[in-house]
Length: 382
Image (cartoon, rainbow, N blue to C red; front, top):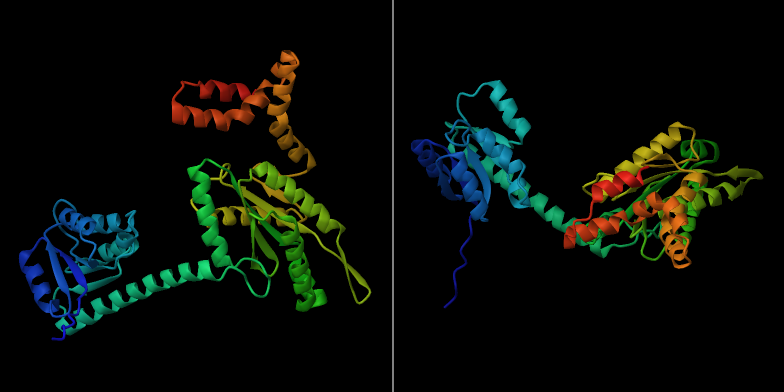
């Protein structure tokens, strides 16, 4: 005997303190949706947390305990993506324009009148559910493409989608293991002028040359993508700002030496580089780090171009040497202690403490030795 296929209807949560309103709405739409009813916002919020089948919320604004505005605010601030992106429709009564505007700003998707007809209400709810389903499918497709299409066939570099996908994984790992991660944005100076003077084809060749230089100089674990015709991004896991600044300085010098010839005209190229890092910059995602680095590129371009800008301002050889001095101070200190030169170590003790501070913070976090981190940090700043 053949089994009958049963259509699983979408589930809608109706939140209203009026039992009559809930019953009326339920009667109008139950032929197309499964219904769950709750009498106030607090109960509605609890239902969303425990019932993953709910796909849309139909809520009143004026309710006890937790009103519709507060429920909407909680939904849009939810840490669970399913709840945060859920369509929310306001059951509209006699609210004024101010209340409607507030609801829209908090993230309401639509309004339906308590007196709306059955066909109108059903059509609007189905439209919102269809749109939400399309967004979910697009998100899944983007994730799949990010993992499948790794390389752009034209540039030979990572696709922007894969760059972001890989970057988020690397950033999560860096936070989990307390490692550094740096992002470098490289932009060709005066690119619009290159296009105007020599044509788009020559400008593209110059960009391709920069792409090849980057690909040849980065490590295997680094990832490069082309953000625009003149702009590239490099993701460097397990790399502190010091190392990224040193690399940027070498790249800048290499580009200064590069001369391309077109119709007997010698074309010189320079780049402006912005650097951001997970340790020094407050960023929630790799996209945030890219945005920070791009803003530093804009600052460098505004200052005339051919510059490297990090969180501390413009980077030059002296800045990099200062970074490197901090990096090797531990090895130097250990060697000096072994040969009995303790006084020499004391002279550079603030540098040594600054260099080992991340290790001390890790030890204190995991083992709780009672290390006076605040006093050590103050001493290292002297």
